[in-house]
Each structure stands twice: as C-alpha cells, then as structure tokens.
Length: 252
Image (tube, rainbow, N blue to C red; front, top):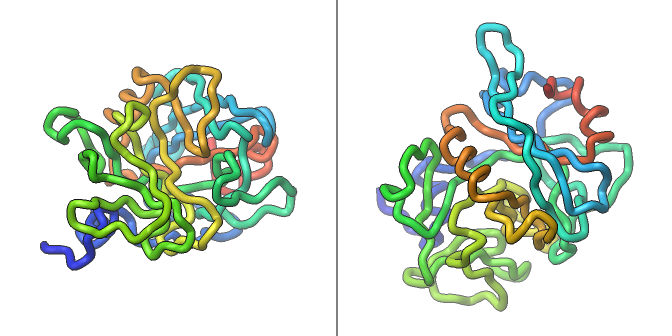
C-alpha cells in the first residue's frame, strides 16, 4: 500500500500498524471485552510531584480472566515535574490533580494505548518484535510545535518538507529503543502535549521531559513481551488514584 501522506506515523496509521481510535471508555469496563487488552504496563508513583515510579507488567490469563504479573517490579523515571492528567482512554476524574500541557515537564496520567515501537536499529537487528516498528534515522523527528499540522506526529524530512518551528530529533541515545504512547491521539489538541514515549533512561534519578524511562535491560523485557495483537495499555498514575480507578477498570 502506498501512503499519500508523508509522515512516518501517518504511514503506520494508514497501513493499520497503529490503532486509529482513541475512544473514551465508559463508567465500568472490562478492558478485554471493550478493547481486547491482554497486556498492561502499570506505572505507579507516590504522588503527582515525584519523578520516580514503579512499573508492574501484567498479562491476562484468559482461562481465569485474572491479571497475572509476569515480570518483577522495577524502577522507572517519569517527567521531571511529575504527572498530570492527560487525554487518553480513561474518563476525566473528579479527584483533582494537574492537567497536562505542552512543555510542562510532566508525564501524562491516565490510561493510554501503547503504539508503534521505534529505535535506531533496523527491525531485523532488533529481533523478537511483536509490535509495528519504525527505524529512526537522522531524518526522523517528532513535531512538538502546537501550530503545526504535524503536531504530535513522527515525520521523516526525507519525504516531508519541514514547515514546523520545533521538532525533536529521534536519533538520540535515549531513543535507541522505545514505544510511542498514544497520548493526545489520534486528533491532537494543540498545547495539550506531544511526543510522549517509553524509552531508555539516562539514570535512575533524572526525570524526563514527559516520557516514561527505564534501564535498557528492563525496556528490552518489554520489547520481547509486548504484542500488538494483545492491545497493550499503559496505565500510569499515583498509587492513591490507581486504587480509586482499580474497580472501575478491572485493574490488577
């Protein structure tokens, strides 16, 4: 299939590699029945301000319809200024907390689809991939200019003329391995935040610009596990908020 649009991420959308819907799910929901989800990446923090969190990885046991933890819990870093509620699959909460904005240094809190994987190596050099994959090169960028038509998209300047004022280079060490978090997606609201990823951390203490980061060893665990056919989700929020949402969404 040839794609008329020249954005790499649009290519993934048109070819069916990345989900094209981001509907808000209802009041009480079975994530498997509603979304087909069988994999959860859960990140809990102690509050909205910290840049540290713990990651729990679960898979759904179809025989018992129960979530089973499949990896040891491990540390992650998040936005240098913590978390803020962002546009995702969850309903807006009434419990308070900040709202995510472009450039606020906060990671989005809520429930989000995990989209395409990406990295600095060709797909055949990564091995074991069960997710769509974008091989990033020096022409690959993520547009974070709210005034651009390509806002919150991965683009390739080999095939698309740069008309934006700001974009993030994707060929950097932090992005040797990563996943797109489908935040503020597919229709991006200007200034609500962009270019949210799961990627490699610089160290265990340094917060990110708004992404979720971890060690290479742990990120490669996710690379080998996550499967687009199992509709993986990122569930990320303070532990106290998670407890309030747990029953509503059937979370482990």
